[in-house]
Image (cartoon, rainbow, N blue to C red; front, side, top):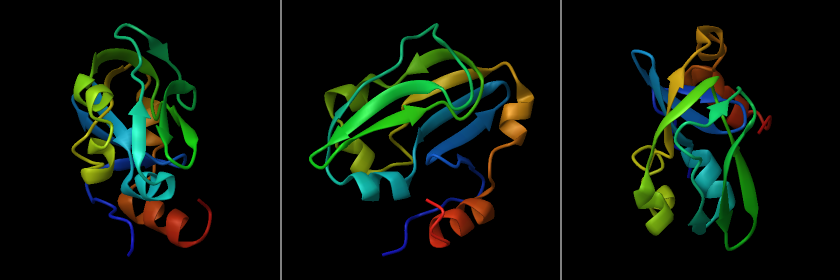
Length: 130
């Protein structure tokens, strides 16, 4: 089954999705990422107040198969985290786009502009560049 790629979201090549609302960007792992991981059994959260750079470590998720680093898709400051996924990491498998990980206050709009749109992300995962 093809991974769900949602129009209207932006994507980082390391398989994070991002949704912008003003200066705040909600982020999580993509459907493709959760498919590759398999059953997620643990999800960490960044700390509110952490400053992150695009491509830098944000947190980590673990599945029955492997663990994966989740990188920040934009540069900014973490202003909220989703404690529900820490308590129930399987939410990432059930609804990758509803189970967000963090909200980042955007401090470098160029990092937002550099993210892939849905078509470019689909090309990346379909073309084997994943």
